[in-house]
Image (cartoon, one colour):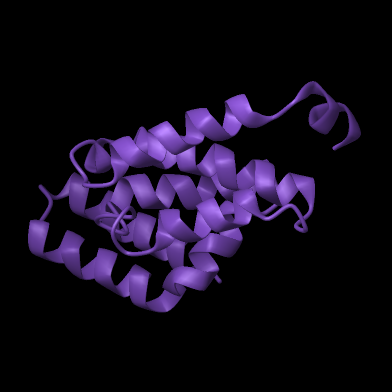
Amino acid sequence: DGTGVHCELVNDFLKERGGSEEVHLMVRNRLQTVRGTESLIAGLCHPSLELRNRVLSEMKKFEMPPNPFSDGTTARLRQIAEDKCDVWHKRAAAIISLAQIAQMDHCQECDGRADTLAWLLGMLMSFSDDEVESG
């Protein structure tokens, strides 16, 4: 939709001019309003690695959402990862996105991060060789 590109241009402009926390927060809030949670989830589970990386980059740059562990973002990604009726690449993208979100600087102190990391490890360890081969 071009929103992320415009937000990044504004952010780059602000960096060149000394930045403004107030404007950064306005851009973040606007991006979150325009995108919404469902669009964010769709981007994080998309089969295109390039698209997923762009969404993750915007999340990191704009610290959006501020706490993906409490706003339902990571809970929705976990649901997708656990849903054996979903296509394998969508489930895999959800798992990879969860791991990448947990590594973001603005998420390091978020409540729910440790639980999500423990769940990720358990999920990865629960795959049997048969599931991986037949996947």
